[in-house]
Structures are given as structure tokens and as C-alpha cells.
Length: 250
Image (tube, rainbow, N blue to C red; front, side, top):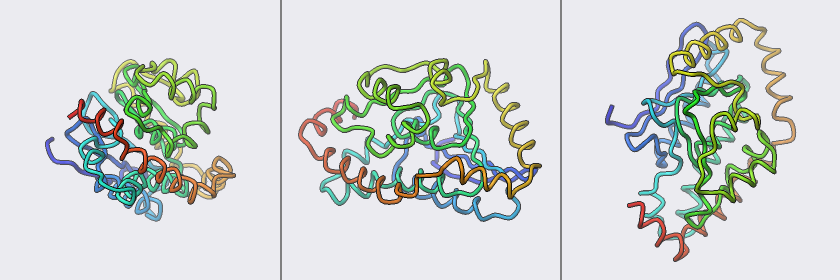
């Protein structure tokens, strides 16, 4: 696999949405837009009752924002537009009337942690450690903070944000509530995801829809909040500190 993609496959009333980028599944704007559009497509597809969000490859679920694209930001408007990509995906997941199961096969960083937190039920392998590295490069996890805090609590969110150069283990993520369960191998993970998704797909769709609404009660203001947060990140990425730091990752 060398070309980025976002695909939707439907099997047994389950919509499997898979994204991929050869650079550790990092997320440039076009992939974020395709992911948002695909989630919205699956949300309205009559043949889909349950959605699974997953990524291609073996080692990394999502490396977060594309550093190359972040480094290319030249003004606040461009910065806001880029970071709004993650905001739009999270809001699409939040608005989706169908339950979304996350399938995390490996490490995830930054915005990828936000995607995991925005799923309704997340399963992972023991290799799926997590990190919020944003402060270490001069910005912060502003856009994804509401989703992460909602799932693991402010104390754990703060710990990850401040300890920005540490990968927290899958066991830690399960203890804090980000993962519902963790598995020894990707094969075990896939079997568990398939079993759960197909079982849920046979449940009353209206009951599932109403429960999804309950799960996300009180988040309608995220439509504007996450875009406001994107504006903060978009301004910070222009700072001399951030630009110099990002050059080390080139």
C-alpha cells in the first residue's frame, strides 16, 4: 500500500470505514475531508446499521496531523482551515445516528487519539499506546480536547497533555475508559470487532439511534466550539517556536 485512501465496505449490515496514509496514517486535509464525507455517507446508507472505523497497515492507527501540511501553513486562515479538518470529522462522528466502533491495531498520536475518543466503543490491541504530543511542538490538543475529556476525564486528559513526550500504554487507556477491551493480537481484535459489530447490527435500529443520542447529549455546541479551537491551533502553528520545532521532524 503506497497511495492514501478512504474506503467504505459493507458486510452483514456493518459499514467498515478504513483510512490509510503511507506516512504512519498521518492525516492531511484531503484525507480528513474524505473521511468526514465517508462517515456521512455511511450515516445515511440504508444497508448499514453499525459502523467500524479502522485504518490500514499494521503498526500505527493514526499519527495525527500531517506535519508536512502543518509546516506549509502560512497564515491564520490556512491554519484554521487545516485544524478544522479534525473538527469536522469528530463532529461527523458525533452527529452520526449509528454507533461507531473503533478498531485500533497500533499506536495513535494527537488527532488520532481524538478519533478514538469520538467512537462510541473502542477496541484495541496491547500495542495501541497513545500520546498527545501537541504541547511539545508548540501548539496543544485544542480541537480534540472535548472528545478526549468526555471519554477519559479532565485529570487523565491533563496528564497526557502535560506529559507530552510519553506514550501511555493500552492498559492505561483501558483503565481510563478510552478502550473497552484490549487484545493480544490483531487477529483477536478483528474477531472481537466483527462479532460485536454484527451482533449490534441485529439489534433494533431505532433503539440504537436513540441510545447514540443519549450518549452524545449536551454536545451540540461542539459545532462551533471545535471550529473555535481550530482557530487557536491555527494561530499557534504560525509561531516561531512551532515553526522551528517542526523543522526537526522534517
